[in-house]
Amino acid sequence: MQLVEIRKILKNKSSKKSKESTLKFVPTVKKQYGVKIAVLNELVKQIKEPDFELIENLWKSGIFEERLLASKILGKICKTNPTKTLKIIQKFSKDISDWVVCDTLATQGIRSIINLKQKEFFDLSKKLVKSENLWQRRFALVILINFAKDKSFKQKIEEILEEVKDDKEPYVKKAITWLKNELK
Image (cartoon, rainbow, N blue to C red; front, side):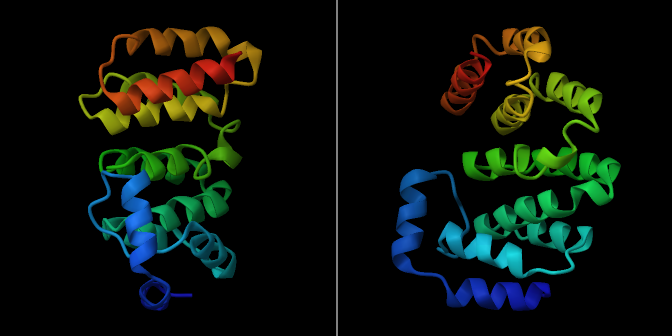
């Protein structure tokens, strides 16, 4: 399935109701089709031979659903090249503009390589948690959700949490709360 075909499906499946619903729950969305998540999940299943070029092209659009698709498809192929995946997520982290894409990229987009690249993910989290960009700070924390159930990472995670303990941004504060709850 190619980019043109994906975009045609997204346009055909869009609705005013879905658009309004997305804006209600994700108020920072700027560009969107107005497509239900179930449609996106089905599209991911239909893409039989995804590649990094498709992922990058979807991301470049800046459209909410295309970025969600890019994140989900990345999770499907990230094991084929974990190093390239790391570079892509670092690049993408600069452009995140909402919590849904942020959280999808930081969980579904990398979950299957999280154990292969533990050090690199912790290093990235330590770096991004100091960013001026609130979405990079949130992304840095949500990456750590992948490690939170393993008690051997608790101290490392708590050290990173210390960096943002006084953060005033609501979306970062929500990620802090989420991560702390996962550590329990």
